[in-house]
Length: 284
Image 1 (cartoon, helix red, strand yellow):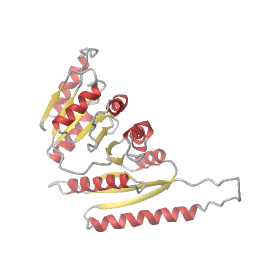
Image 2: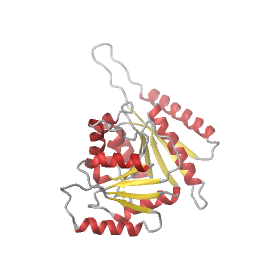
Image 3: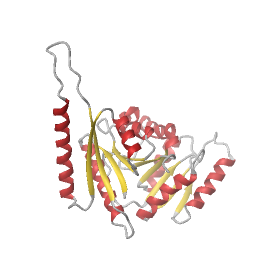
Image 4: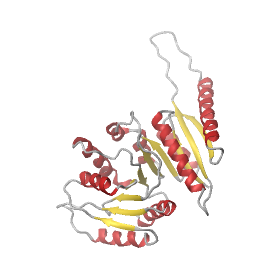
């Protein structure tokens, strides 16, 4: 059984990620030789600290925990009803810090994918300044699919992997791309932006050949534009070629952040409806 973990704070952005996860789980479960996929909702709550400038407030942990559990049970029941129990759905509630609790949970249970929505009211600027989604993706050894507020589940026809082709664990990256391309019947595309300072390295050539060899069973292509601004090149490419997912490799977070930051400062119309798949090379 595959497992999808969906952290939620019950906001509209989080609910959009939950809906996306349910559609993906249904897609996986309905495959001819598919296995059932479980969606696990995950909520982390904070215990309020008492103030000392007035009467001492007594924090009733049991009461707060009970209230949070009821809220989760209500959501799980609602989703089971809406999906007619076609998908296995469960919920977990923990006190603490979201990064710590998710990392701990994933270390105890085999989670195949974490799906999260943008935080900070959906502001991409806030998201990359330290949102839960990026923070979690940095800490866990699991692939993370980040769902923008405007993203709606639809048939995935093309997945674009933006990479510099350096320091790649080809078997792990290709395994993930192959899985989703075969699941959706989608095309894999390797986007490698070059500029005047990109020196030809043997490692790039070797990794490109290895990657293409591993993707032999799915439709694939390579796009290597020359552009001084990688962010602009990728945004233009996504817009023209209508990619459905943008994939990045976990070690490329500086590059990943740069794509979005530059697109904001130059007021480029970044595709806020395109989910971003962070492939973790330690996720074997």
